[in-house]
Each structure stands twice: as structure tokens, then as C-alpha cells.
Image 1 (cartoon, rainbow, N blue to C red):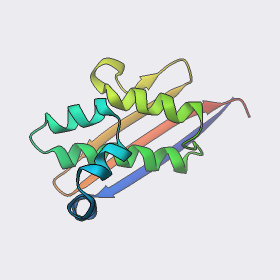
Image 2: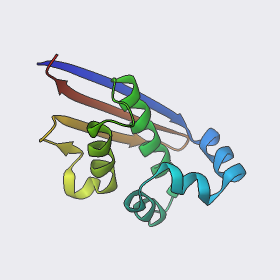
Image 3: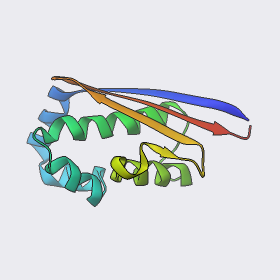
Length: 114
């Protein structure tokens, strides 16, 4: 087994501009209903959306593609970070999110058989 890692970084200002242009359609197409509900319940929803977008970028940089089962596992983990703790042990996926006033960061790791 070999580890794969990815890091994603999102500038809040860029996400804010995209949301201003495309509105709720962008959020609904990009994030799961669980993610939208969680982010919208927060004091600064855009920071939380940015962290989840950073996780998707980290997944891409770690070699996880949107059509793969690992992508679905990532979305499940991100939809309920409180319950999952950012981990899906069934597929060896772990994600950590962080955000500051203008930037969101995600670190993702998973183990592959190759």
C-alpha cells in the first residue's frame, strides 16, 4: 500500500465573486445538501464552503477523480464532519479542513493498493 496526499487552498475572495455571479446554482451543483445545510448554519458560510472546495481540490491533487467511489466517500465525510471526524476508515480516506479570514486549506490523505 502506498500513501497519496493532496493539499487544496481556496481564496475566499475568488469564491465570493463566483457565488455573486452564479448564486445558489453554483452552491447546489458543487456541494451536497448536507454540506449546504451545514455551511448555511454557520456564522460565515463562505469560509465553510471554501474549506469544502479546498478539500475537493486536495482530492484532485491526490489523484481522486469525481467519478470514483473515493470521491463519493469524500462527499460523505464532508457532509457530516462532526460525525465522521474527517475519516472514512473503509477506504483509508482522511481529510482535515482549516480556514482563516480570507483563505481555506484542506489536507487529504488516502492509501492505495498500487
